[in-house]
Length: 101
Image (cartoon, rainbow, N blue to C red; front, side, top):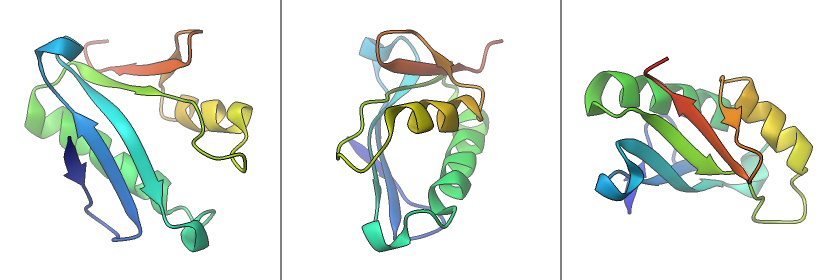
């Protein structure tokens, strides 16, 4: 698992990219310090991550599981957040952003 932290030490994206994921970067975990949530840190970090993935990796896109890791995160709100970045919900708990489209 690789680690991406560009803008803030308060937000980290852990990801994998290998043949198993068919050319897609798979975000395994996202960590935002609890006292920093709700301040837009992750929105900025995810924007940078997407731009980096498009321009530097040759990946076909990004996929991730949308199951919250805690009981404080609302599933519908989480899905809507990723949809605001044009991720598409596959109906099975995964969301995908396809760079080829």
